[in-house]
Image 1 (cartoon, rainbow, N blue to C red):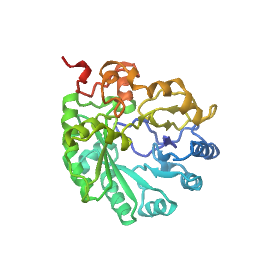
Image 2: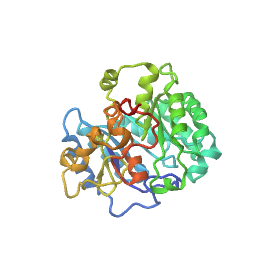
Image 3: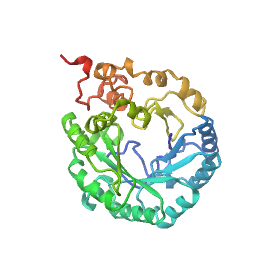
Image 4: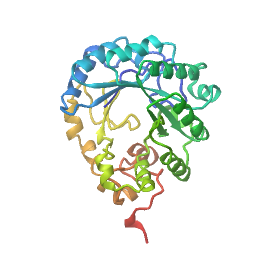
Length: 338
C-alpha cells in the first residue's frame, strides 16, 4: 500500500513520476484525513498491508512522525521513501528506527556524483544518499536502493549494484522507466536490452551480504528468474510472485485518488468520497486488472500471466490500453509458437 503523502520536494529529478514541486499542494490530504486513511488501510484485516509513505518527499510533511506513530498503533508495518535533501540527517534516520519504521528507500541513478546529481537536479544529492545509507546501517534500519532504468542510466547498473553491495543494503530495486510525469523527457531502453539486463540481474549472487534484486514495472523478471534457476511455477506462487499493480498493490495519491500504482494515473475513486477497501475490492478497473487471462496480446495467453501479468502502466502509457501486452517483454508464449 503506497501513500503519496505529499508532492512537495526540494529536488528537481528529471524522471519524477509525481512532477514534485517545492511547495505542497493545498489539496493534499490533511492530517485528520491521513489518520482516517490509515484506519481504513488497517480495515483490510490480517495480514494487514505494509504501508509505504512516499512522495515527493515525506519529510516535507510536518505530521510525518505522527502518521508513522498512528500507523504503528494500528498494527501496520511502515516504510518511508525520503528524498536525499538536507532534511535527511542521521538524527532523522535514528528517529525512523525509534518510531518503528521497517525500512527506508533511497535512490542511486548514477554511480558517481556527477551522473546521479545531473538526473536529480541538485548538487550534493549523491553524497547525502551515501551518508544516509551509512547512517541507516549504523542504526540497523533496513535500506532499499532504487535505480531508474533508462537509456541514460543503464550503463551504470553494474557499478550501482557494486555500490549498493558495499553499503550493505538489503534490497536493490530496478525501476524500469514508464514515460509519465517528467519521465517523458527520458528515453526508455528497448525490449532486447531490457531482457539482457534482467538476465544479468537474475544471475547475481543472493545472500552473503549481496542485496536481493527486485524490479518495479518489469514483472517479467519473475519469469526470467524461474527459467534461469529452473524453478517450478508452483514455487513462484508460494513466493507471492503473483503480487503486482492492482493485485496486492494499491496506491493513494496526495489528494486521495486510488490507483493500481503510482505509475498508472487512472483513478478508480477517491478516499474523500468512497471507502478505500470497497474501491480495491469492487471497482471495475481493479477487478479487471486481476483477470490476466483477459489481457490482450501475448500477456493474455502467456502461461506465466498469473505470476507476471506484464506492466499495466507501460501498456497504458504506450498504447492507451490498460490491458494491452507489455511491450518491454520479448517472450513468446507457448500458445503462440509455431
